[in-house]
Length: 302
Image 1 (cartoon, rainbow, N blue to C red):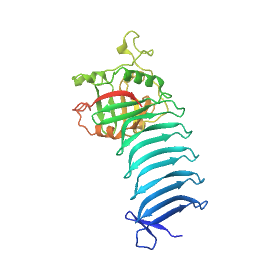
Image 2: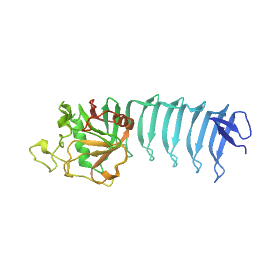
Image 3: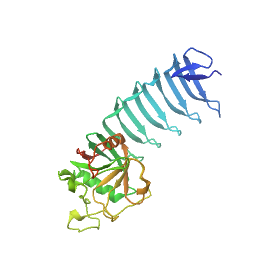
């Protein structure tokens, strides 16, 4: 069997100096069956492309154009159920995008425009229930959060209630520490007095902590869990008292295991980490408060 080799991005038959045109195969070492079948033209993948799982079930298929994915591509789980269906143009996601859970229920659907998500996107859980995500809009772009209701139900409800009441709109990320975290959620940051930034905020409802008739005193009971503060983790800021969280939250730029078990994790970033990284590059004062305001508007999105 002749072997196809690749040199400087061009495919050749072993021993030949002429770029390969034709159909190439990859066979399973276990069964001898085809795992990959591709069409080449002048050394580039060009034409149909198919892959199979070791079981013989279809894994993915689509077409290449001059070495880049082009047109409709479909992928499957090993159990045979469809995994995703995407459109490409010159190797970049462009057009409808759909993904399914392994049990065949739809996971999400939307569209790409030149590699960027475009328009409205909808997401569903494995039971077919529409999922509510959180979108933080900033001048650098949008950060999308998934909330962990099973791990921190009080914190998630508190956060959603604040979002629904526009509590966070017009506030800023008032604490930005490079290679550590960005923090926001303080209503004081709507004001120009930077000395009070980071000192405000309360829970959205009474949970047994604070004065019941004084909403500004409401705080959240801790909901520490076994989740880890990984890059992109959404966690709740607090004072020295573990039961002192109110409205302020932070997002980790890197893994921070020293925070595990000390703060309540209640979500994670699922899209927009590049936005967080851009925020990390701004200039700050001696309190780590950005010199130029990074305002946010937060909404429930899908």
